Image 1 (cartoon, rainbow, N blue to C red):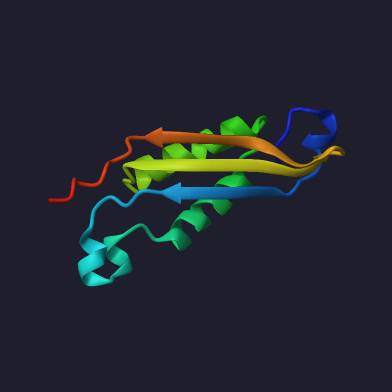
Image 2: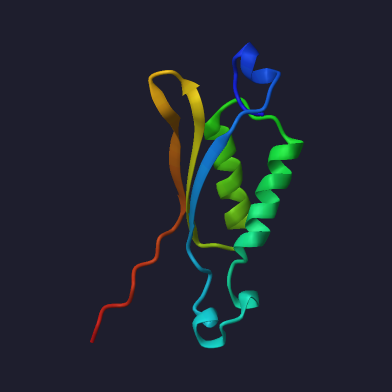
Length: 111
């Protein structure tokens, strides 16, 4: 459940998320093992658990909690989290926010 208005406090509503996660290292490229990367099924499960256990007032609050969890618990160096409520306004299909947290890494220059 997400929202600050009375009608939003009594019913759940659909949200759409788009999450980019930087890898904590390059080991997965040599091993091909999910243990050497961030398991997006585990991230998705944690988000589902968070959504079922916590009521959020603002999409900004939800996006920040997801970003913090990805950085802290999955050790990603950087993430971009987009959260939108669907169909909440009659003039817009979705309304939401995009946040970036962490430090982006730049590829090494070519020799």
